[in-house]
View 1 (cartoon, rainbow, N blue to C red):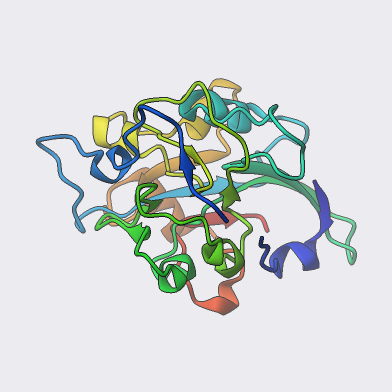
View 2 (cartoon, one colour; view 1 turned 180 degrees about the vertical axis):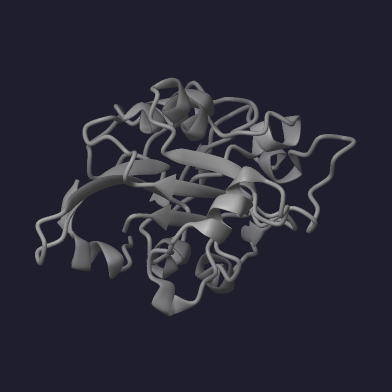
Length: 244
């Protein structure tokens, strides 16, 4: 995807029901995914810092790793309708000609519009700031997709196969980046996208605890100029960008 910087920073909403869950899958598991001895706590605020000056145009390692980790196979269906938890965007500043590339996913807002508009409470935010969807009570109305200014949510149009037990999915429901909640609750200390980016040698994606002043992400946010996409909406996102 390639867009201008102005259009990118002013991203609009998207939109488009039925509920059919894949047999044998307990979709409530994601909402309950917590390590027994480390429950979600407001002491933590998990987030990402994305350095666009290090993000390589044409590299899709973060997208591929997300698909593998979470069983999101974007090769199914048409490009217009397949599920997309993270996507790469190429941006050009028309004033300077400056080009950069960056990954866009759920921004895990502290004031998430998707939660505000959900009629069933399926969209919710954990105490540690991670925004999720309870697939058991998602009715597929897609109000959350229309409310999200980042086009970060997808509607699952197809029957789902190859699901991961920790990342349940279902036809007729809405889904988005979970910040690899299973890895967080397992204590991995990273996300699949950040892990893959580091493995590629780019290290453009840094995961960490924004509430911990000693964490690497907190130190960098304090000392580096960063911003959120659509800062004008005051959503207090947990994903920050450098170089946009």
